Image 1 (cartoon, rainbow, N blue to C red):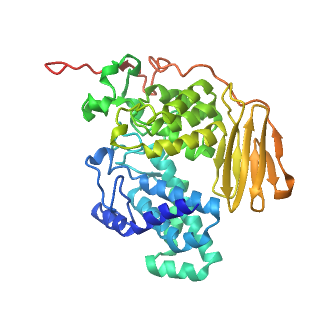
Image 2 (cartoon, one colour):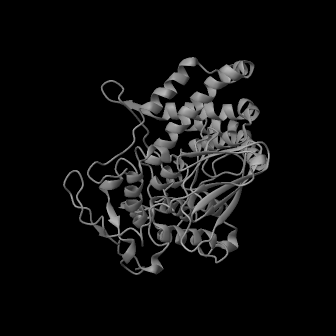
Image 3 (cartoon, helix red, strand yellow):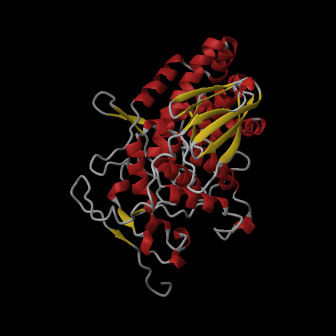
Length: 436
């Protein structure tokens, strides 16, 4: 927990620079950079870097996760609240209302996590995470006013917060535009994503990968093709807003057109593949993340270790095969997806000062408190409370969830029709001339 706190403190020290960056981009609040060393934007290409406004929501999500796991209300009151307020202000200012009676709140001109699709309207990941940011910020402000009125008054004076701002955040969150296509039965990555033609990755020559090294960005941007998970990442971080059926439909749509050219993608694809049932694919993505640097899979380990991917390997194990999800409200849920042939998986968690040992086996899941008071979790709807005197508490498991062999069919999308009746086709851009 202390390491996480230090990382978030680092974000807090960058808040003044983020506030200045927001002013440069004519926004209220704060806008954190996509890539930085000293708080200033260091990205060379605005479309795939600076336009990733979702960084604000990502940082707010991290604050919420940390406070939920530790109960560190002191950090929230003194440091975290400023970030939450200023990022919420940015979203409220960036978005706009459209409709006869302020029906829907839209966010235009942004880039989601996928760097092969840039500067779009209503990117699903951005909107879903902005909604979380707005709601979490509003809740934090209201709880601070109730629980720590002195800190609340200091924050209001420091940030000049008006009460109606918080109401505005909640209204915007409730009316956030969430793209959905009734014909395809999926969440489009953005308002215009499904209007593009599909990049035929299966027939793309191996010597033309990664795409960004062989095709101009303007060529890539014309196609439905992803560098890394986008909608799939939203389903991991905000999974409670997607039904199991929609998660599977989205995964089957996006996985075949995700290149994995980013080392950040395999981790998330593994977690959701495991959840929806593609157990063999989940294990394959896990190995891709595990060996990113060990086997130099991206041919650039000599330039430095892929730290985020390495950290994500733990996420594959715990959130993917262990099936753990965190609602940031003192409750962990588990729905395990242990790979076939694995005898078990053991990991430890520290939640609000209690350290617990968790073991997943094909037919059961067990918990044991090693230090602290008690550990609370829910396993497939069954609430489990473990105290130091209980020893090992075991919960039976009826299998490891759905099992779907193989992987989604990359050609399943071809030939289907959009809402306007046009047919979705797939192709590979061809090089020509002396450099072809």
